[in-house]
Image 1 (cartoon, rainbow, N blue to C red):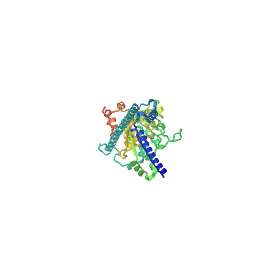
Image 2 (cartoon, one colour; image 1 turned 45 degrees about the horizontal axis):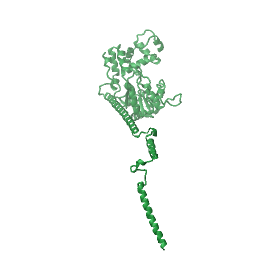
Image 3 (cartoon, rainbow, N blue to C red; image 1 turned 90 degrees about the vertical axis):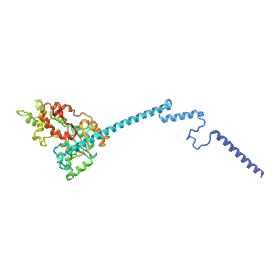
Image 4 (cartoon, rainbow, N blue to C red; image 1 turned 90 degrees about the horizontal axis):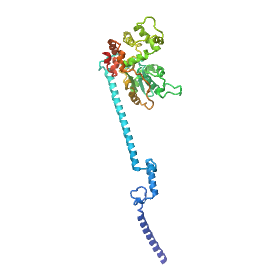
Length: 407
């Protein structure tokens, strides 16, 4: 009995002694924590950290900032990284601000151009011209052949010859995938690679004029729906400069089609040429026989030239090609600001990620040439010509060419 009591006393005394040892030891090592690596601020003796711990800390920090231990300089490197980051942010902010300013300026310009058309069409500017007040339904189908439709991207483009229309047609070909490359066997994806001589093939483009053939009695209803929901655009140009460009292109060099249809007629009527004319443009040019700019203007001003066939699309007034009083265009571009307008338009159409507007050579007939080209034209003819194209000047905001009209 006494032995059992002695054992119990010894056990209790030993347990108390062990507890005292544990308390004393734990006080020396700094206390107990379930998460000893989470907070280093309470390390009692950082100066006694082992070399291995320092190296591990260095490796960890160096790895975080993306540099090697050999070149690690925490304070300096962090400042450099921060400085570069701030510069990049500032640069991006500046570029974004400039882009926003350009978009804002472009939007204001578009609003002004569209408002100008609305004012002229409503009669505020007292400019009268055929077709101003007619309804879209009254426009004959044959006069809708310049409105190209892309159903995939919901776009309608009214092309105007001598106003970058070749390149815009190339864009429409790529978007509609209507032409296959003989090299790849697939539709063209780059407008610049589309042969420019092929894009004027009318079979490539779906126009409003073809709707009757495709949709019959539903054609006008479908046109109205597409005009309401699709994005519509056109590009314009100073009317007199466009006229000079058309003359240079079609009569300043041998062009068999235009020589037979127009050039020979102009020469017979206004050229005072006795005898027969050369049969081909090449023969006529070799003999020094070709229409002059004054003869061309006389042809346009002749009373008989009011016939539709005389006003070829290359010099027909834009309002007769695109009907801006009946079609509410969402974007009116200008050849004079082609590059910036093209960028803005492709973003508006949401196709800027698909293609770029071709950057190739474009017609360089300049407004500064007007005075030279009209120098031999009588004032009365210049005035009459202005009246013929006055609606285009007014609709699209081009100033009256006083230097030409009153020289």
